[in-house]
Image 1 (cartoon, one colour):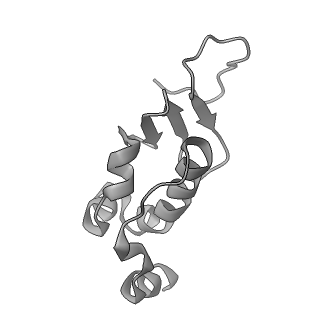
Image 2: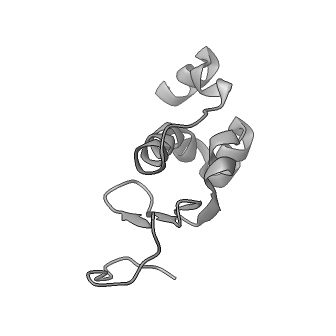
Length: 98
């Protein structure tokens, strides 16, 4: 269900549940375990380990460019975690700056 425009003041939400607005994709974190970015809903652990190909399959170059930002958001709300090695590759840097 889309929460776009929903007024959640006073809502009884589980601990570590956040709705993040103002990003390229709607983002929600539920119970500190599940992260929804756009139409994709996966565990924090899954998001932190996805391959470049898997992220590209989600929404192409737009998703590849946004992925580091999503991990920053997860780190901020849930705590610092692992990141895939491919994010620091020259190939990735060249691809997202084209």
